[in-house]
Image 1 (cartoon, rainbow, N blue to C red):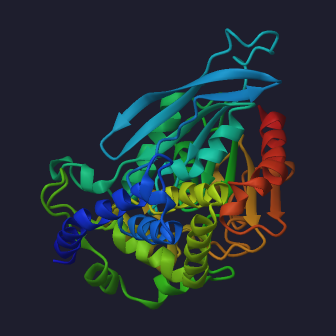
Image 2 (cartoon, rainbow, N blue to C red):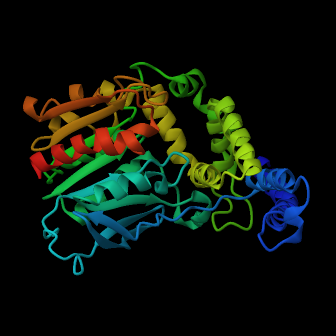
Length: 413
């Protein structure tokens, strides 16, 4: 019933939230006589903060319409390359007809970015995609909110996730492909490529794994401790709920986005409280630039999706409780996952020095598993001073991580 209560509360709050938004606009609009009243800026800031805390956050757009390459503005079009019930494979196609003397980009390496299915939308990797587009053709997995998937489409578990990755690799073609997995998907991506290699299928030229739990026994974090300290039944009874009417997925069992969001906030409550207080102060002072930066961050951070219950519980069991991948005991649809079968691919692992989600050594553990990859084709990089998000977004990603990723791909491209 928790999901239903949440929806009832949201519906009840909705008029108040949008009333607060309207009042904030009335008190700040240049043409409004109310904006000149004493204390108007402070009152407007209160209304705006109430609106931002209470509003619904829809899935953001990637919004990548152009990039700069060699001083030229190159148009970018987002294309749906393949559609599955729980995921869309998107391609960001660059058009160079109007790019003057820019070098031909047709032979650039192809990159598949596997986004995490762990609460936030794939748009969280917008900066990752935009940066990669400078030197690569880019695809990304855009996972669909489970509440929007009709129940008659069936269940979606971790094995299905692995199968999706295999299908996407085949669809793109492995000949000139490099796969970048960010956070949670390092595990199913390694499984997918291992299974393809064991069957004799072509595998991508390289695997770049960033901040993922290949072996959570290494430097466990609070996330790992929570997953291992509770039984699978505890998770099933406490965080799994049924999607209510009127969503297309009504009747489907999910780990709701609003519960995941509450967990995100609980990990760093002081930081988020301080951020909202700073936002309030920026509004009062009229510091519109910093206020807009806050809006952009939380428009993304507060937009969450429901995860299929089967997938979430499978991940808890396989990855965080039984450690089946590093123990060599993971079977996917009757096939044993054996990363040592991977040949003809290179491996780069990337970790953040201060990552509090995937601890030090968890991603790097892939090297000990991929014994079929020759020694010179292994590389690891720990990003100094970087937390989890810093390895794939922001200044450290663009200035420290991306040059290494670009050069690694070029070496095997």
